[in-house]
Amino acid sequence: MSEAKKYPAPVTNPETAAFWDAAKQGKFMIKRCTACGEAHYFPRSICPFCYSDKTVWEEASGEGTIYTWSLMRKSPTGPYAIGYVTLKEGPSLQTNFVDCDLEKLKIGQKVKVVFKPTDGAPLPFFTPA
Amino acid sequence: MTIKGKAYIAGIYEHPTRHAPDKSTTQLHAEVAKGAIEDAGISKDDVDGYFCAGDAPGGAWPMVDYLGLNTKKLRHVDSTETGGCSYIIHLGHAAEAIAAGKCSIALITLAGKPRTGVMPPRAAGAELDFESAYGATTHNAYGMCAMRHMHDYGTTSEQLAWIKVAASHHAQYNPHAMLKDVVTVEDVLNSPMISDPLHRMDCCVVSDGGGALIVTTPEIARSLKKPLVKLIGHGEAMKGPRGGKDLDLTYSAGIWSGPRAFEEAGITPKDIKYASIYDSFTITVLMQLEDLGFCKKGEGGKFVADGNLISGVGKLPFNTDGGGLCSNHPVNRGGMTKIIESVRQLRGEAHPKVQVKNCDLAIAHGTGGLLGVRHAASTAILERV
Image (cartoon, rainbow over all chains, first blue to last red; front, side):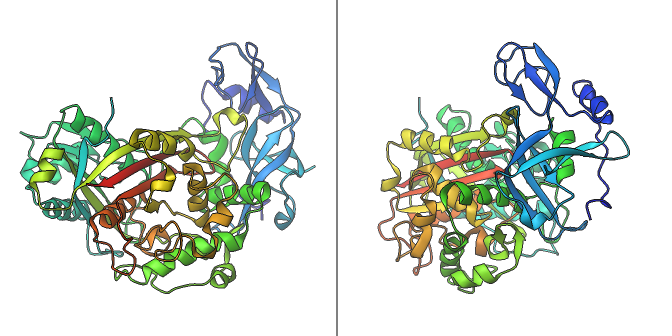
């Protein structure tokens, strides 16, 4: 089902274009603030924690654990599992889990990023590691 | 500075409709405005403040014009949009405006037709490209909260079901309620899974309808004929993933709006006789009860079990109109009806079967947006004079 699903292409903007350019190379990027050291997601130019403008792009490991999830049993495009992943680097992010048995997801389970194509830049999803 | 006791709710009206294929959204706004104005016993030409949110077609100025409000007199407008809790925030803002002398009779309206009309799309922020593809809906966003709450605190589906059971006990006495049948814990657990771990009966209804309030000065309220209900505490707050740091979906912005309201009112949750708690889903109620301090974080499951929320049975009667879980959820928003049933309880106008005895202090609390993503919360504490 997830293979056939069509995802919308990201619109992108000057603040986030580098993320999507990297995604086209299969790289999953986060932003880190060089002033306070904190990583964040989704990327901002100003650090949301200390308001420094000294934020830099960093390629993330793409590894994390499931913080929570919920399996939507019915939708026009079929069942899908939404959730949050806490990245190895710290930040948590919203995603869908793909390419796995959606009924067997567990909080704390290790997952890794996988990109799925759109008509534009590919979108990051997560699948059991 | 405080708004404590500076503003009274003098008029309330809840539209009886739950299904309005033959009415326009603006018409519903006008009908609830008329209802609240008549309930207060004032004239529409006396209204000098108007409050509406994203459900009002075109926003404040088309609505003021359509409603025929007296523009020579109207001197304060507020279109704060925070989803379903907008109207609780409006109540606080109306009190602020009244306390500052910026208006003296405020009208707040909500109406819409999610069953039989088009709903305006949810506005998107900077997160659009990073979240919209993942299909966060109300069901799964609250499902994610429930899943984590169960993981962290051992909350069970049976405990969540008790919230729906209590709402159904109240709804049986509401002739306008969409779902009047009393249900059991087993009924809830046997209803189809919608988005794990929430079953169909953990979800609120979808209904057309609306509601309106008239908020005024103590002096004007005393000149009218309705029992006196005053706002003594108010809080508002927002919460989101804030860059993904320390994500915790087991609490809501109510953890901040609640204490702000209680502090202003100078009372504690133990003093509350009746609680209107937003109930888009059973988990919404459970988390809010914890966040507002009716029980400790993580103990909401135990608190709601065994009928503790049923009027005449438990310690904290809640949503005695049947709430969003059984009665209505106009425009997929809960804040307005939460205030209205609180005022009914304080006036002694609730159905006799669910009327709380000596009800002198009530809370109306709601959230807007998605608890599992980003949202607002607002808390109002009301006192019978």
